[in-house]
Image 1 (cartoon, rainbow over the protein chains, first blue to last red):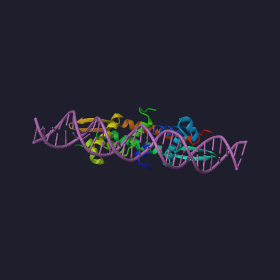
Image 2 (image 1 turned 60 degrees about the vertical axis):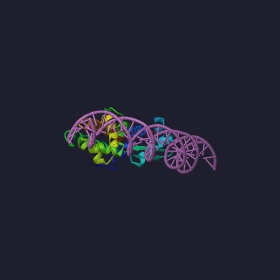
Image 3 (image 1 turned 45 degrees about the horizontal axis):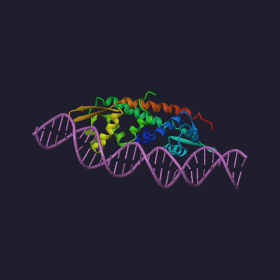
Image 4 (image 1 turned 90 degrees about the horizontal axis):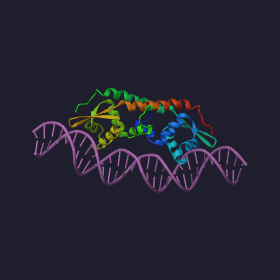
Length: 102
Length: 102
DNA sequence: TCATGTCATCAGCCTCTGCTGATACGTGAC
DNA sequence: GTCACGTATCAGCAGAGGCTGATGACATGA
């Protein structure tokens, strides 16, 4: 268990459609808020709200550049979550035989 | 993209603390509802509610056994989600260089 | 058949959270 | 300085979803 945040807290960050879209967009390209607003079609305040949650969870890093703010997605939290899910899948594959009797 | 369900829908299933706990418990051992109620300390209706969501998403399979109902966690959805997150992490690792200019 | 135990479903409540509009801050251009 | 632009924060609202108690279906054992 290498994760620094609980499984449910990490999953919660991806549980919203728009936020998941933002994560996917930032995975492809480092971009600033105005890009995300343009691509997603959401309001600026809404995008900023989601970026705040990602920032507080340390899933993204900000890089101010003049008037703009670039957002970069950190791969580490995604890797940690992926590894945790993979471990669960491994356990589940073996749990078909292990059955707790009533 | 091998996943049969959207990223946010899959993440939503793990976004609740109790539901994530149930998934983790079922990953370790195939067990029936009464076990989950006993271990988690939650009400039976609450556990049944979460099991229903996992069942409808086909994350678990049921096996009626007399009065009891055994629940088995399928590893496939976890693997698919893990793979998707790993791909996002790969992309994010390279996206540090790719920057969309304003 | 009747009582008991296991589990699922339903309606209602309540909390959480995402969305919105208004507003404030900082930066760069003029 | 003044204006435009990009961004963040705030309060209020509304919808989604988790929890609860009541209830019913089904299987088991006396």
